Image (spheres, rainbow, N blue to C red):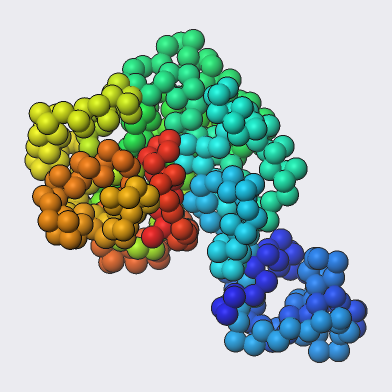
Length: 438
């Protein structure tokens, strides 16, 4: 709050309320540096608040007020939108979960990325208190949110409920059911379809399947939000796929956390930016977000070739108990190409993969360390440590990107960002990736 004051005042600031200097206000924020969200330079002024809404912006020296707050040296800005807010569900348990966002001036979160808090299976719905998107929104409304939330319907969620977790093509009947689920979510108030295409089971979906679901979202003015199919070796092809889906579905496209993963791919950032700029110049609505650090964030099992998850997560865990399979997996990670090989992206160096979210007794003391550090601390082979952690689950943060590319992306007009927050073992749920802050 030292740098941002009044982040909750977004709508009225953007509306540009006219000043009436002699009117009494409940609160006056005085001497702030006002950044109004229009793109204009900041200017110094006051903000008058009445009945919980901004009533005036300007010089309010003569105005009466029940309370005056001197915010000299601080910024008064519209509320920021966290494009990767992931979920509003924690607010149902504890409204204080929003404090880390609100104190940074964030007033709206964009929830969902492949996985979403609705729809749910019948069993999970019984335990959580809702199944459909409409029921979920009703629960949030009754609880009273401490901030604004918008929600996408997650493709991973929809596919899991209909096709399952295995590598198989959706039947026409399953496609019909998936479309119906997306339609219910959009009619309930979802803002679009989101995908997380690196992770099982979404990785098994075809472009045609995603396009058909995005078309349903497009009927309601929704967007297509995507963690693309590849962020490294086939980054440019993944961007092309996202743009094709948007064109075919008639939806704007938003690319989650644009990046070039792996030193061998760092030179592709200019080409990635050029592709997006060309689409925008052609009249397509395309945007992206980034995160302001050089580590990725993903479930640790995402380091394993997705083919080992073709029969579902339980089968993957069973395979990890087999020494011969572990040898195959290691060989794929050491030499494999043509898939999103995060071990290769960090230069085949276990010191480049930090892990967290481990709550079992063996590894909990090592949260925040790299796998290489854990191996040295426990006097074990790093591959042994990796497979042991993969069995219990963790959040992995491979350091695969460059500072130069991060800054270059930040400077693009179509880029937004999102913030860091606390994480835990729950990030292994669904797509294997819940949120990416460090």
